[in-house]
Length: 232
Image 1 (tube, rainbow, N blue to C red):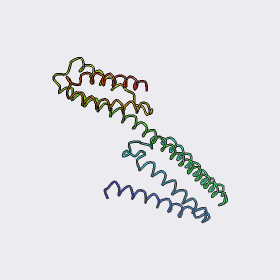
Image 2: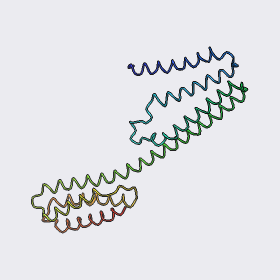
Image 3: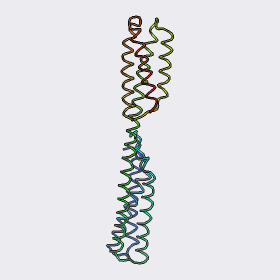
C-alpha cells in the first residue's frame, strides 16, 4: 500500500468517525431513531462526496470514456439530492419533525438519486454504443488505407511499372485519405470490395507485361468503387 492510498483511506475513515462522533456528542437532544437516520444519511452524503472528489470521474483505461456523457447528470443528481437530504435533515432538527416524516422524505430523495443513477447508466451505454459504431467506421477506412499503402510499397519495387500507372495508383491512394468513415452497410461492402481488388492488383503486378490488360481493368474497378464509396 503506497502513501497516497494509506492517507486516502485514513482520511475517509476519519470523516466517518467525525460524523458519528459529532452526532453522538451534539445530538443528545435528538431521538435515537432520528439520530441514527441522520447518521446514515450523513455517511451516504459523505460517501458520495468522497466518490466524486477522491476517485477519477472518467475511466481512462476504457477508450469509450462513457463516463464523459454522464458527468452533467451525475453532478446535477449529486448536488440536487445532497441539498434535498441536508434540507430535510436541518428541517427535522429545527422544527423537530416526526421520524416518520423525515424517513419518508429521505426515502424520496433516495428514490430520486437511484432514478438519476439509472439515467446515468443509460447515458453511459449510449456513449459506449456510439463509440463502438465510430470504431467500426474508422476500422474500415484504416484497413483500406493499409491495403493501399502495401500496394504502393509493392509498386515502388517494380522498375518496369509505367509512370502513368504509378501516378494513377498514387492518386488513388491520395483519394483514400479523404474518405469519410461510415457504418453504412453499402459503404462497408464497397470498402471490402476495394480491399479485395487491391489484393488482386498486388498479385497482377508480379508480372506487369503478362497482366497488362488485367491490371488496367482492376485499377478501373478500384477507381469506380472508390468513387461510389465517397458518396457515403
